[in-house]
Amino acid sequence: MTRNEYADFLLPNVNHSKEEYENIFKERESKGNFVTRIAPSPTGFVHVGTLYTGFVASKFARQNNGTYILRIEDTDQKRLVEGGVSEIVKVLDDYGIKFDEGMKDETTSYGEYGPYIQSQRKDIYQAFAKYLIERDLAYPCFMSEEELNEIRSNQEARKQRIGIYGRYARFRNISIEDAIERINNGEKYIIRLKSPGNFDNKVYVDDAIKGNLEFPENDLDIVIIKHDGLPTYHFAHLVDDHLMHVTHVIRADEWVSSLPIHAQLFDIFEYERPIYAHLSPLMKKDGDITRKLSKRKDPEAAVSHYHETGIPKEALMIYIMTVANSNFEAWFDKCTDGNFMDFELTFDKVSTSGALFDLDKIINISKNYLSKISAKELYERTLEYTNEYDREFYDLLKKYENYSINVLNIERECERPRKDIDSYSSVRKEISYMYDELFNPNYSIKEYYDINFLEDYFENYYSISDDKNTWFDKIKECASKYNYCANNKEYKANPESYKGNISHACEVIRVCATGKEQTPDLYEILKLLGKDRIKIRFEQFKKCFYEVNPIWDTL
RNA sequence: GGCCCAUUGGUGAAAUGGUUAACACAUCGCCCUCUCAAGGCGACAUUCAUGGGUUCAAAUCCCAUAUGGGUCACCA
Image 1: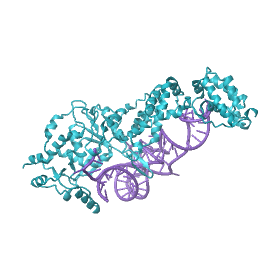
Image 2 (image 1 turned 180 degrees about the vertical axis):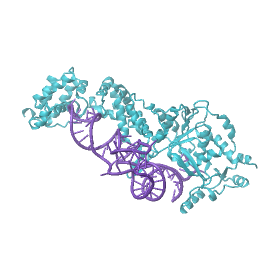
Image 3 (image 1 turned 30 degrees about the vertical axis):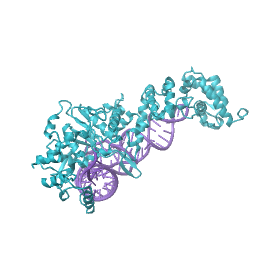
Image 4 (image 1 turned 45 degrees about the vertical axis):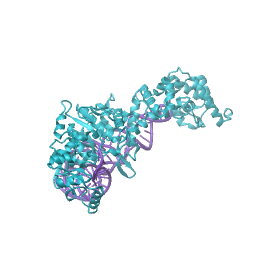
C-alpha cells in the first residue's frame, strides 16, 4: 500500500485535497491587508475576556480598513450549548462589534471563506491531515486513555517533561501493515503529528504585544485529529487561519505557550506565519491570591452581568479601552464629542501583564457617561432596562413620560451635571420619591423641624412661578421668622441662639416634600411636584409630625 | 516539576539613562453650596519586589534571587 492509499485508508471519504482547498480560497482582493478574527466556542456564556479580545481585534481591523471574521470553534462537541452561536452574535453586536464575514446564527453565515463553523469544516481538516500522513509527518496512534494517564503520572513522578515525545510516542514509527491490521481488528485511533522538532533547538516568535519570545522547539506529537474526526484547536488554527488568509491572530495570553506548536505547524506546511498578538488576561483579586477572572466563580466575568445591573454598554467599552491602551484615558478626557471609538489603538501600548478587573472604575466611568447623555436618552434607556427587570417602575415611567424626563433633567443640561445615577438600575433609587405611587416616606423628625414654619412657608411664601433667587430669598425671609438664621456666619458664631440655619430650614422643606434629607436641587423638585401634591405631602408630614410632637403648638 | 511571561502606591498606570516618580479610580481631609451628587484644593510610593553589578548618573541596562501569573488534554 502506498502512503497515499494509506492516508485514504486512515481518513476515508475526504472529498478534496489540500491543494484543491488552497485553490478555492484565494487571497482577498480588497481588505486583505489586515485580516483578523475572533474564534469563540458556543458554550452559552460570553466572558468579558471574549468581549475584550473581540473588541480589540475589531478595532484593529477597522483602523486598518481590514477584514474581521467571526469563526465559531465548536470542535468540542461536549461543551456545546443550544443557541450558543446566536448568543455570541447577539452580545457582540449589542456592544457594537461588527463583522465582515462569519456566522450570523446557528446555521447561516456570510462571506466567501466559509464554512465559518468548524464542525462543518471536517473535510478540510482531514484533507490537510492526509497531506501530513502522505509525507510521513502524521500517524495513527492507538494508545488508550489509561495508557496515556499512566505515561503522564510516570513522567510526573520522575519529574520529566510531560507529553508524548521521544520514546513515549509509541506509535510514531508504526508500520503501515501494523496500523492496517489494528484498524481492521477494530482498534480505535487518533491522528498525531510526527513532530520534527528538537527540544534543544530554539524557536523565535515576535509577538506584537509581548515582543520577542524564545522557546524550545516543539517535540510533542500532538493530536491533530480526534476520535470524532474533528481537529484539535492547534490544527484548526493552522488550517482555518491559513485558508481564511488571516494576517493577525489576536487572542488571549493563554495561547502563548502553544506558540512553538503553532509555529511548527505553519513551518511544516511552508505557510507564512501570521502576526501574533497575545492579550494578557483580565484578573481578579480573590482574598490573597490574584487569578484569572473566572467564569464559574465571578459573576462579573459574564457580559450579561453588566446588562443585568444596568451598566451602559458604552461605559463597559470605555473601560475596556482603558484596559487595552492606558493612554486612552487621557485622550478621552480631551475628547469633546464623546466618540471614544475614534481613538487609535496600538499594540505597543497594550499592557504585558494582566490587569485587575476594576469594578469601581467601571462604575465611575458609567456615572460620568450617564451624566452626559440627555434626559430623553436616559429615559429611553431606563425604559428599556426596566422593561426587562423592573416592570413596576417601567409602567410609571411610561405613564408619566414627560414628567419623568423632566425629573431626569434636574441639574442635567448644565456645565456640571449631576452624577448620582451610576447605572440604569440606580435610576429608580434616585428618583422614586418623585412618584406618588412610590412615595413612602419614613420621616425621622428632628428637634429643629418646625411645623409652623412649614405651614407658613407653603401657605404664604411658596409660589411656583418664582425664579430661583426669589424663591431662595423667600425661604430666608420666612425661616427668619421662626428663628432659623439666614446668615451662615452669624449662625456659626452663635449656634445656640438659633433653631438652625438656612440649611436646616431647607432640610425641613426637603424632608417634607421628598421624605429624604438629600436630594438634588430643591427648587426644581418643588416646581415639578406642584402645589397640590406638595400640599398632600405636607398633610402627610404634619400627621407624622404631631405623632412625634403632640404638644408642639404650646411650645 | 518543565517551559514561558510579568513585577512602579489599595487599583489601572506614565516614565524609553538625567531636576521634587505624571495622570486616573478608590480612600481621607478642607473649601464651596439649600442638603446630596458633583466641583475646587490638598494628603496618600523618602522610592519603583530583593540583592549585586555597569555608569558621573538607574524605576529604566546586566546578573542572581524572590514573588505572582499563564501553560503543559482526543478543552478551546
